[in-house]
Length: 358
Image 1: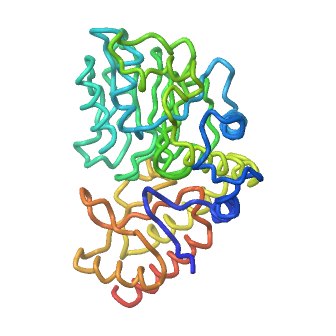
Image 2: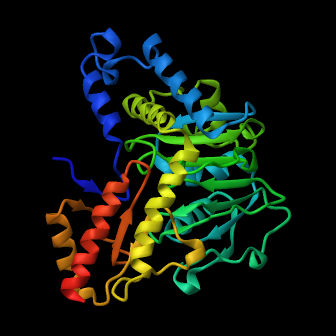
């Protein structure tokens, strides 16, 4: 029996994708072998990779002057790769700090370049996006970095800032949850394990004029120009993860694309936030205008109730609702693959729990 999985990552995958992968697991397309067994240089896998890139470009309407890379190391590796690829020695980078992942990105970038926090919502416990008017941007910065959706704190950019310098965004937990204008960004990166597929692969979308701009010491495995020239195969890529992400792209197209997915995600978020806001029992800690459509943190009136809430949810087949250890409380991650039925079941359980403990 399948449960309702609200994990923040690795996270739910579409059941149709899992079932197709199951059918193809031991014999892909009559090859007599699994995708995970075949050479990444084989014509079969090269076709898998090319189809995944083509569908990615279709879904996001990616212009031709952007490279699409399928890399390893997670978004965490990109915390180092971005400054090393985009800036020369002594380069400057501005960062907006909206939570845990922004904080980590700033700390890592500072090992290589002049990385400065130009705005932060830490003083309000990361419950909002700092007003753009308060950002202390440097006109000579090589880029501005934001995290579009903070998985832990549940803060999301609903609109992206207009900037005079290249805009870089960590989109790990809301990539392909809504349409975006890729041309507004210099670089987008996203770990796959939240909204694209399994852990082990990272999507990087980078403007081609930035492929060979950075530090001469950047490791070749992290060098965007090297990877683009080799079609993301300068080393053996995570082939099975790449294949599964490709299946997710096909599933997204079958659902009607990102506009249709965004409408579904909005309905799910409105249902859950509506229950929370209509209750005197639950509380959402994030300011309304910055609330994430992907990760919904909430608290109970007494932390002593948390264990009972989680135990009851687990028994009801509602899994992985415990908030991150750094913030506590609860968190429901409602990515693309989490159905409206799952959110409805969670809301029913929350109402029952409030009735019994309120």
